[in-house]
Length: 335
Image (cartoon, rainbow, N blue to C red; front, side, top):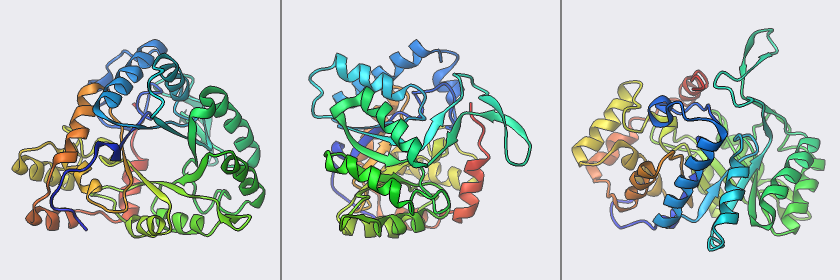
């Protein structure tokens, strides 16, 4: 359901650090946006510039993860240097380890099929990984950490069925940290619904859901609406489809059509993509993956965009089959 009018609060936009905390990622246009300045200090400066711009624009939610290179470290340094930012809410994630060694091509590793490829992160949803990574996050972010998600929880990693893990995560809840999951893949809706059923001591364990929803991949929407109705917070990631719905990022005719609709409205494709998510009543926060202040400003401008009724129907018709969308996403090269 699209919201045709009204201005959306900037507080519904958050800033995600996936694209600035490490040198390589799967977002399109990184050579244009980052160039060769990707050493630790360059990305630290870039992260701080993005955070400064986001805070000045009114954004008050920041998302990081253990696997986002040095994102938590960069964020912790920014928080310490900006003592007036006590109103910023910090969320992070555990479940992947960054192993890319600050290389654009990743570290060569052998997969289960015996193939060697450059690897940037490794998934581990064990209780031991949670203990290790939560300690690392808390060491950097301390009492500023307000939300902690299982990173890309799926039905086959065990994170949604492991009672020992749930008990360990409930300890964070008892210390005032909201516990949640992030989701990826064509079965996001099933993961959200499974997580909604998890309880510890009679109380729901997972009360924050960070999922991919955009014009091209809206399949998780009904499950996220159920989560919101149950009192959970919903955070939307990848609103611009890892750059496909950003200026110059189109990869096929669907992307081109969204860009053309944006042109017809006199706006940019990223603003239209953000406005579409913000129109969903269950979407509490929509994450921007901006890598510079100009992109922050463009994403924030979506809060004032109205989507005409005649554009709504066209956007609804552009959704891809979920399996197709995620197959294309999985084939993206890190750059």
